[in-house]
Length: 341
Image: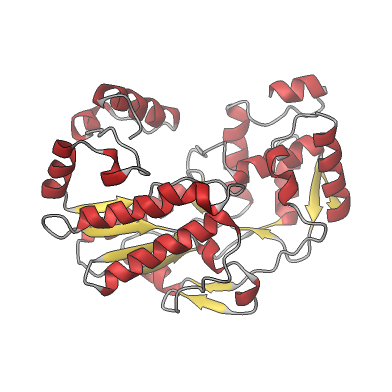
């Protein structure tokens, strides 16, 4: 953890778990924060800390990284690529350790794979198809992991698409793109009507339970696993959900929606999508590859896990959490009240 010392790390970890409603006092003694930095040599650990992890760890779950869809590759590489290299070095220091690495299905989302049906067993995506610094950094990190796998390191690779909040409580990261999308549309009062658009939502409790199950199985099988909810939320269901929650949004053509967002941002109006406004092209294109995640779904089912459908009920759970946290604007509020919300 990035922390001044172990005590500071423990405070930060506890506060974060409390924020998401996950803290349980009975687990306190089992958590050992190690101050460090994913982008630093040897993960920024002290010599003693590094030696302890190298000798005592049974497996490594590598889910750390810098997520920023606007940043260039050069600024993301130290944490996302360098951190992966250091994790693999740690895995091969002392007794060999299994590495469970979380990447992204975004490495396949490009024009090269449109019309294709991507399966877990398919070849890794190509380098030239990568769009944006984040996907580029994850692609390079994957290449390191796959090279290590080829040399005998047990590496399991997990590629999720969009991970959303807990399916029961709705607890979620309100700073991510999906939350910003929902709030931004509510603030505008508009949802873009894009042909073939739908919304993938894979609840974090499902994805984490499956990964944890694979770690605890300790079978050394590795494998490559894809997470994409087979039941997706339609644009109509998204609009209905927002309206039912008290947000009088309406469907609008993409050009109208984009113009409204740009006008709001230019006018200094508060909007959660302001930092993403430059990413929306003049012409919308919701096309993407098809993903056959059958192998992952069968593996998850064997662990007793089934992905909750991305339907109106799940979306309503997320909206209730957002409202409860004061994140979504109040229907009919003034611009000042919306900004406070």
